[in-house]
Structure formats: C-alpha cells, structure tokens
Amino acid sequence: MKIVFDRDKCQGHGRCYALAPDLFDADDEGYAVVLVSGDLTEEQAASAQLAADNCPEYAITVEP
Image (cartoon, rainbow, N blue to C red; front, side, top):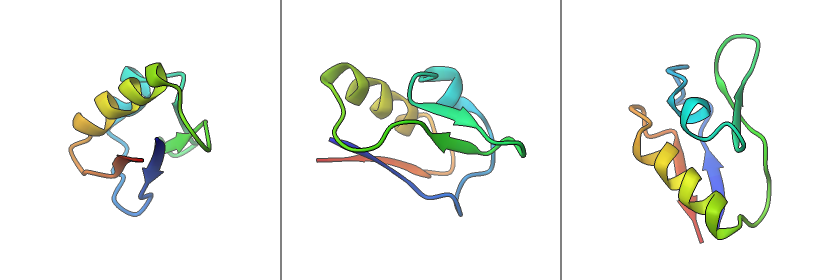
C-alpha cells in the first residue's frame, strides 16, 4: 500500500496531519506534505486510510 497525494486538491484543512502525524506534516503555507514514500506497514496503511477518509477535498488516496 502507498499514499497518493494530489497537492492541487489540498486546501490545507489539516485533518491528515492531525489524524496521522507520523505520515503527514504541513508546509509553510499550511498544506499537507507526505512524510513517507513507498510501501506502508499495516499500521501506517490504516492511519493513511483514516486520513484519506477524512480529507474533505479527496486529496489523499491509499493504493495497493
């Protein structure tokens, strides 16, 4: 599993880094930044899916 993030859709709501701070952070403008690349552990995949499910802009997806 891996995180796919669409920066163009991100509006900087901050839910992803509030829910999964080990996977996401914010840049200087408040937009999300993905902290991991490549395959996720099961725990990381669950956190990433939680962030994706709570992103109001659908900027995050978790793909196999």
